Image 1 (cartoon, rainbow, N blue to C red):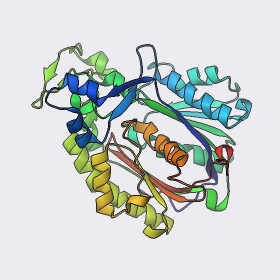
Image 2: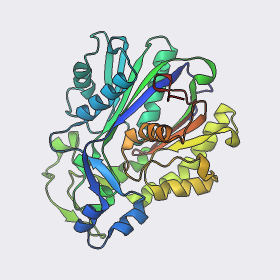
Image 3: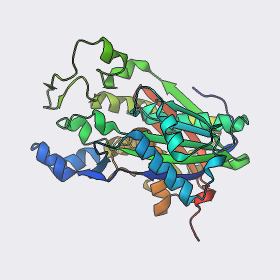
Amino acid sequence: MERNNTILDCKISGIEYYLPQTIIDNQLLSSRYPEWNESKIYEKTGIRSRHVVSNDEHVSDLAVNAAKKLIEKGNLDPSEIDTLILCTQTPDYSIPSTSCLVHERLGLSKRCVAFDFNQGCTGFIYGLYIAGNMIHSGSSLNVLLITSETYSRWCHPMDKSVTTIFGDGAAAVYLCHAKGEHGIGPFIFGTDGRGFQNLIVPYSGSHRIQSNDGGDNETADESGNIRTSANLYMNGPELFRFAMGTVPSLVKDVLSASKTSFENIDKFVFHQANFYMLKNIQKMLRIPDSKMIYEIEDVGNTVSASIPIALKRAYDKGSISVGEKLLLAGFGVGYSWAGTILTWNPDVLRHEI
């Protein structure tokens, strides 16, 4: 659905990310799954390693580390942050919101708005839309948008369909007012709740309370993956079909709404689901290699944090330059999809020339 053709008067002024220290590489995973050696895991996923939290690390820890890195490197004044938005599907607690914990640890003003939202793979685009509208309307001036995920908590160690894909991480983005070509938008969104069962933790939320299943009964699927109902389940083939049928149309809709030609997009930055899926989307859209951003090989799929992490890593490597027009697209759990366009100009973290 197209919101309208409005370009929101805001921009990404700064961006940083944080990855936990523990690394799970393909050598370790292949020792668990003898039928999948290191090469096979890489061929199927395009991932060589992923970062995961330790037993005493939580979403708030990753979020705080990413935010502190942004504040310190950008020389930002925490007292000027008037809005904190945290996107996560793996909160520290069901109650209270994790944003309150992060707010306290960052020492933000008591007048600061702080809230969580749960969105998954499209979370960063949704966050830009929420933050952008708050700035555009004048209700907020300086927004700290954080995406932080610890999907490894939900993955059964003997389920190779998910442990080979997902990694943990957080990104922090500072948004402020901007006019004209530096704005963000338009935005396109879509939802199809019929696919909710294809990426799900069945024994969770209120279903955990209502279920007679203790969530500890292990079962093996036809591929030998072991999980309980309290673990993450992913139907990879169905998610692939969803992405192939949705993302090309999403990209075309974003271009149409923005009245921008395909050729005028400098870089395409998609949710980093896995290399195989991204490569197929690239082929369908005929995106040149020089315009396609891949930042998954040593990070994995970090869910809502994947797009901002990819943005920062690509910028640091010189794959994205100031002034370039970027098309961002998220897709996945829900099903949900979202896209937008922005001009890259992170002035508080401008590279030295």
